[in-house]
Length: 222
Length: 270
Image (cartoon, rainbow over all chains, first blue to last red; front, side, top):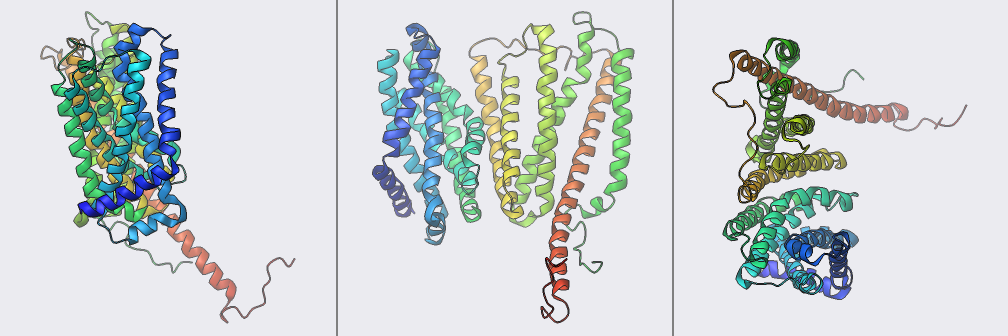
């Protein structure tokens, strides 16, 4: 199954590398969001530093919607989804593969955005284990939930508008927990990140399990 | 057109109940109406004012029952979605029940937020506060608005049923996570500031407790009545679609005549 998942993930990442949509559109978009936040907050450095964890994760969430949309848009043309269904791959492997590809793209994006936060908001990333651990857990949760809702909306004509409505309320706990964990790491003395790491882990487990259970039947229907 | 074959009207689980559903629903609706009327009379005239909140306490007979119905409705949607996804209980019944309950739930959830805001403004001084319960309810509304949007845009009934069952179940699985996280979010920051006045208070005056009970029962029956009628409407919609298709096929066959298309085509001749 892991080999099959690697095949699917490899295919998605290869398409991504060749089309460069992620590098040329999604990442710049996320950076634009960071600039817009700075404008909205009147470029107040103290305020931006205080809020940088939350702003970072809002930017990640918005970019994640685009990444999920992209991941299923590439299957929409040339009946590629039919190909995927007929390929004989285990649906759970397809789920893991697509989620892994989205997760890897999000991880790269987070590195770019973290640099953006450090440069633009002059935030200091302290406590590397918490920052990286919470980002990793949040990425798994986002990728799993995104893949699940991506296939739900995949075959619909209105998927561009429906997906954010479906996905963003669902990932609200990820936004909250990841922001609080980062806040604890970025701003000393602002709480204990352990609770938030636990919420992120629970969310990731629930949505990976839901993907294993339901992705197959949704792929068939889509 | 009279010879169209019908499947038995209510084959699924609880079929016996559904066959008598017309009468039961009417009774339920009448009792709900009487109960709501009694709530109005009891709540506005026969119960005392609160020493602290004055007349505002009368929202107690509206807001908590409406909120209860919203949570009940979403709970029913979650259970019905699970029952649809479970292969051994899969039936259109569960899909229609989930849809009907979610629609009613969204209306009551919006009412919960509205009545809560109206209550919050004079008592807390703000329309909204980021209390755990409020935040969870707001996200719950967003989750199920999305669920209904998904239902609307999917045309094929089978695909719609399965897709929305997964969406409904997965959204419901999110609710405890949302609730726990916003609970910790708030308790880590501030002591709980919101204690619903009078609710769960053992010293609640007797007429108030009775009025509250009447209103809970009345709103719950109103929920049953609304969901029941919405369910019947869904059944009729499905049947109309089905019959429309059969009718169109029969008309085309009749046009072709007994000779099977040997008649000259008369379309457009006047």
